[in-house]
Structures are given as C-alpha cells and as structure tokens.
Amino acid sequence: MRLRDALERMRVRVSVAGGAITGELSDNDRVELSFAPGYYDRVSEPALEEHLVALARVMHAEYVRQYFQAVSAAYGRTISKDPPAIGRQDREYTARRAELVAEGRSADDRISVTVRGMRSWRVRIAPGTQRALDERQFAVSFGAAAHALIRDQFAGVRVLKNHVYG
Image (cartoon, helix red, strand yellow):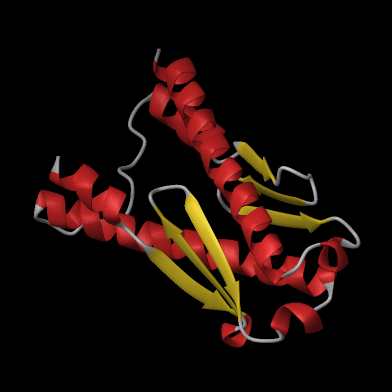
C-alpha cells in the first residue's frame, strides 16, 4: 500500500521554452498548464505545438524518474528500469507496448495530443485556436486532452496485458 500511496501523491512539475510554459501532473492523470506573462499572446500556434511536445517529453521523463524513485523507496533498493523481458510473453508485451498509440482530444477538438510507445509525441492545435481561446481556456483544453491521452494509455496497457498474459 505504501507504493500505491507514493505514486498517487506524486507531483511532476516541469518547464520548457526557458520557463515560458510550465506543466504539472498530479493525481496520476491531471495536467495543469500555465504560461509566463505575455507568452501565450506572442507565440505562434506551430511554435506552441513544438513547445508542448517538448513539455510532454520532459514531463514523461520526470514522471519515470520519480516513479522509479518511489519504487526504489518501497523495495528498499535502487531500481532504475523495468525488469528485462524473460519469456515469449514478456518479449511480445514489451514489443507491442513500444508501438502502443494513445490519443487525447479536448472537448472542442481544437487540441489533440498523441503518443506512440511513450516516445514519439505529437500535439496538434487547430488553426485559429489562440484567437478563439484565451490563455486560461487554452490551458483547460490542453489539460483535458492530456487527461484523455493518459486515460487512453492506461486503457491500452490494460487491454495489451489482458491480450498477452490472459
């Protein structure tokens, strides 16, 4: 129970673009986004997409770091990576998980976030979104898309485990 509690209490806070964008992951699937003053009004949508991809990568890397830190504390020894695949099922699971695609979209479909294998990220912002949404609305929409992506990833892993391991 100690590990589960530690994982549920994890807060991952990262910044990119010289501190212009900050994201925080909490409660396993809640993402909050904030911008440095004036940044949202100055940045182009293509540049914002690139910065949000960078944010997703950095946030995932920091999540993994904190995850293994919590696992290490729970087991009383340093654990820094998943155990190696041992049998055919483990190898199949690992290979298929590396190709698993998850996607999340905002309710208005203006923002989508996609990841393949938790390595290849893509953020799409519909043209005109920044004109239509203020900074707070954009942050809420991005948070909803990120939440949906995380839930989709969890669901995909569950389905994959059921398929491979029965």
